[in-house]
Length: 111
Length: 115
Image 1: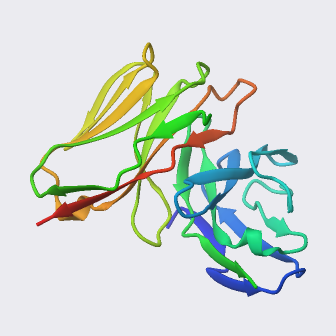
Image 2: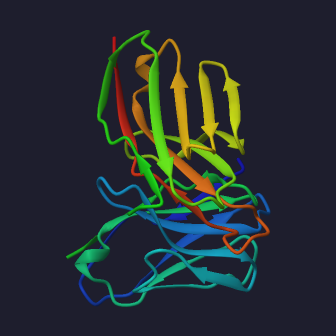
């Protein structure tokens, strides 16, 4: 089935560890985005990409890196995990208009 | 002040009621207006989007945009228990503009429809 696949679904990290959240889409969408969702705060944009090789910062980029080497994949790297990065992370693929499909999310806890 | 403000809720209504969910915004560059539904522990799902001002209907759902007032609404008719979810409004600018690739979301309104 077409869609956005995120892995892992759950992760516990220790403070200072690094990890990569994977995101893949099979709809050939140019645009992809990473959001974090915290209770009562809606979705906040971390980084986004408008095509392979092109990325830009969103609202809350500090502590995260992204790259976009292919149209399909858009991984999010946490450089040195902090408790403030405990959140639910969503990857989305979008058309020029809007986020069309979201992944199921990665629930990350940093202890 | 946030670019997008959404009525916070939570909202609890009896089955069959008409529900109104609302957002206001401040950025005049927004041209696309979206509503997403998010069930607990799931990713958001796009319900509807509209371009510029006007109404759009899809079954029991009607999206309304008033750009002059910077105000958007989602109406749910004959609400069902299965409509119980968090509803998020979102807005974006044209894909060729400097804001391309970015949507701005409201914080969400949690709706409970009681049988």
